[in-house]
Image 1 (cartoon, rainbow, N blue to C red):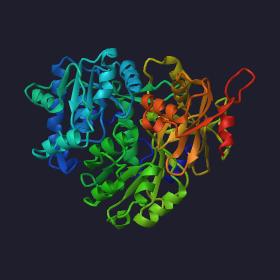
Image 2: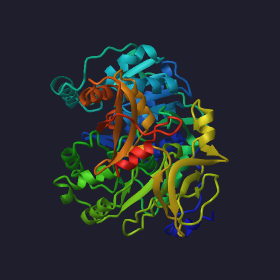
Image 3: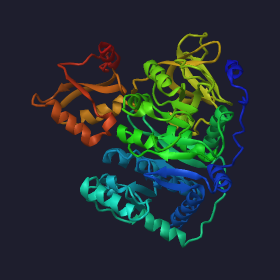
Image 4: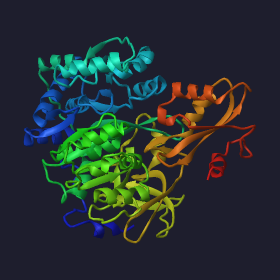
Length: 553
């Protein structure tokens, strides 16, 4: 397909990028640390880290990791919400040439065990609130070191002591735990400050992140993202917004978690590159608190998912904020709904730009040009140096406007899934990544997602795979058969519904829900349960999820 979308790029946006402009993310960080040394880089709970401080602290953390015997290429897991410890840990690990394994802090012990085992993580940085989860499976994984941290650890005394005391003893958010080979985050930094950091040579082919994504088999797979993949995507995103960005002066609201590839690239890494100031929101679910925090800053960039934008619009005080500096509101992770986009534009005076990406693509594939005046209902146009096609089941391009599978080729596409050559070969063919999403394209190169090829369920921007839900539910001794589908939901896009055939008639919905909560992250837990005498099946006995899903429409 001819790149018809290039003519739609705003003035000043290049059609191609150099994926080797920087050898690594460490090079980008170190350049910015020097260039913007006195600028503010991150803030959380009113504690600001300048680029200079982040440079010093991440150097200390890198030196500490090296001092305990970790080497270039070793995986380091990070399991916490948006706190100042996150950028310190990420950039420390990356500068030491290690591979960052982002872990959702809400994972159950089962999910955590799989990710730590699959990635081969040598160390983990974990918030104390979730330490009991690790305690349950520590004997089953091979961690050399555990680095624990409290919510207030990066705050100045006495605020640090007060916050940590309240979190632990008043709010009871830190259950008692016992971990082997553990050290406090601040103690690790202190030890690192006494060591010398040996900066390794890092090339574009070296792994930067093992970013986990679901699979239709229910097994979470580690997408291997190299420094070249990530640098490419930063260059691509930068190219699309370059005429809009004032280096060293942007204020970026980071409410989506940094362990999610969207916020990691679009907020953290992109604006490290541009000398931006990231405002880290630890708990965006506390909408009144979130709005109060927004009131402290004249922010220019905000990213989110549809549910976040919708939540803000329905929170008292949001419409009274100062939006005079807002340049970009970027929506991704799930479809942006038209009523939300139109209300956002009305309240903020700024268009909501919808984009599209996948973990396997570092993640950005398409985005609406920043100069659109109104919501388009599309996922936009491909970023520079990216090819996107809509193809049929044989891999042949379909006629304009007809639906087919959206496939992607570009320097941001992962090298493959860790330890899963068959899954890699299935998803990457002749350099093209097969997304599994069904889409269309118009004559101007604007793409739309019309459906998902697989049975994936999208809950508030997070992928939920039916097989994983079914595997857990089916392991309950009173369950005979189960099928999981996604059903439409006003705020989260979709929720999980399960259809269950009982093995034991005493099984009740409450018992099943509690069982799911013990084994699944909250967003994966079925919100709807329906008991049935039998489930629809094919003539070979395969349960027909689609038939069940169609009944819900």
